[in-house]
Image 1 (cartoon, rainbow, N blue to C red):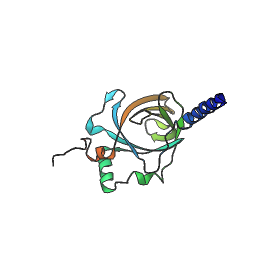
Image 2: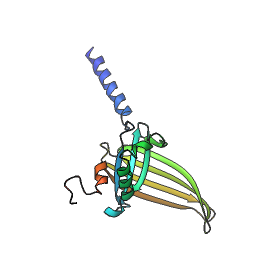
Image 3: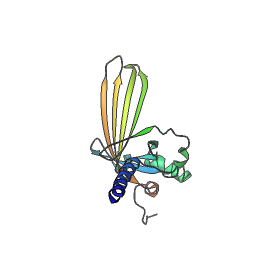
Image 4: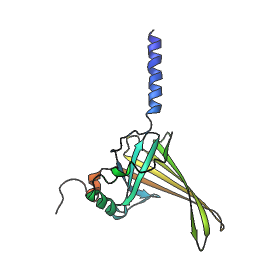
Length: 180
């Protein structure tokens, strides 16, 4: 009888660990990340972008990528600016299993036309790997472009860290006493 109970506990643990691997959040749970490095090079404080996310289990949504000034303006005018986007945005980032962290993938195809290159088709795959505690994020942006002048490939890697809304509102200068 004890063996059956132990077997049941082991099976329950195996099932729950696989199901809870992705992030489940409510519509008001907004996560802010700032770019620390791009392709291994540190990003200056004035050039850091704010990447905003919401998660719904097997799917996630990148609500926006804004510069610091733009994010501050939006949040000062409406503290729920990014939260209001949750109902209208497409949750197009798909969860995928990974041994490195919690991983979501976004695939996209788009076209653009220039006089020099003609019409080019771009196949883009972004892989977002979040640490299990969500404090860090690594993004790999892979692009393959095809067109009449040939093919090209590109890969960019970004490392981001999680911050809170007050950190953005204070211009990345902390939340303590500020000189006025």
